[in-house]
Image (cartoon, rainbow, N blue to C red; front, side, top):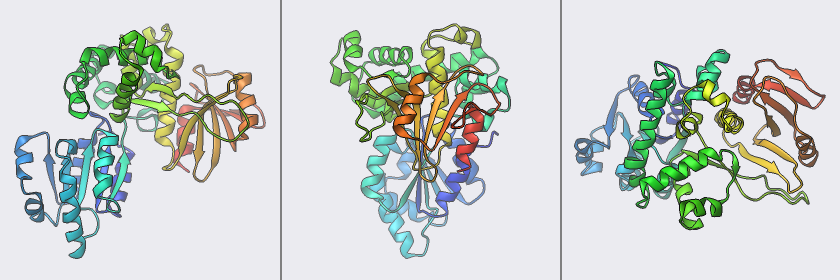
Length: 389
């Protein structure tokens, strides 16, 4: 089993809070991690996708009271959203009886819906832990691993497949399952073909500014409909809208977000790219690398970090801006090659923002200064530095 950095975060949260919600897309390993925790302490696992387990919770308070001394793991909580109200009473009763922490581990595959349900009823009783696919710090030991993670993405079954063809087949099946089964559970009825086309269009335009009107014209729907569809993909943790930096700088700043398909392997599957050779010659290669770097750095950044990009109407740009709770503002330029230097627009943008630190992230492993203010560094090196903060 590949150790996940999320494991320590969940254990720490359970030690301090009555309920912990582990949030992440399907197939990232939430259940595997939860069962690993269950092996170390008395526990009860309920899969709410199973009708048999849902039927056990017909009278939730009565059933759960019989397991007051165990950690109860509730998988796929979105299937029984009304359960949150019952959990509040069970947690409060447990507190009166002296058990204040480690009661429930809740697994969910959608961020906004889950947060809304729990936030209304479990305020002060629940902590949230995000879990994504494998990242560079968990599986990358050399350049071969890095390329493999980039091409296949971080979903465990995709990354660990026997070969690239098997990995691509898994990702295509994953996409089809989401379109045909999972999306209808979370949102309004959306034609699978329309959402498939939108998802593919987002992959083609990976990392570009959101232009809902252009997408709407191609799909023959309205711009608000496109926005609603993208909202749903973002809620399902499949798409990221990277917001522009906002500050009172006296500059004309871009106001539209950039849109990324979050997992690089899904980008490649949507575009039919099966291996490193096919990716290297594809027009999306640069944008795919940028999105891959951004996701890994966000995964490594400490809790409370604000992420954005910076772009002015005059062309000054920073690919990723991290506002770190204890380390101030970091400006990050992303290059696919093992060498290279930032464009002039990066230096102009840094003069605007005056960041605490400046980095150029490339595909190499060496670390060296490019100037007194700017440092070249590999993705793994910067991710490790962020985790250490």
